[in-house]
View (tube, one colour):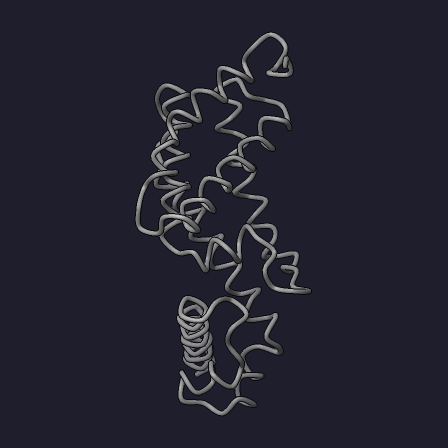
Length: 196
């Protein structure tokens, strides 16, 4: 009986998350209320508190779900083969992941929700993604924190440009391979790309 109740509770939590994502995609991450989420799942607003103690808890669950999806994207990318080609595949996969869902991109990579900070457990998923990225960069000989910083800034920037300026297109995402090659060349230089 307890297992069935737990499964039902988890199914309702997921239904609430699905409704919150749908509203976020339609109205923006901050453009919906708990009352609207409750209405979308045919529930009264106070009943939501059985599943999520506050709106930030819904955001936190969405954040964790988004990073689990990104981890799955990483898992679907082969890390076998020539390291620079692996980097290109990771870059293309990341950009595809980002532009496929602008609301998810904003939640994971931009600070658009005033005062929201993910919980320690949810943030650990983000750190896992970063550790996997670091491993792929290291295979290509890019071992510095500068390489990680350059990678994250560049590829989130390309995704933001694509989403903002040409939704559904590929003007910025198609630059992935070229950017990887430039980055590898610059960071592999004897001065680590520091020359001006």
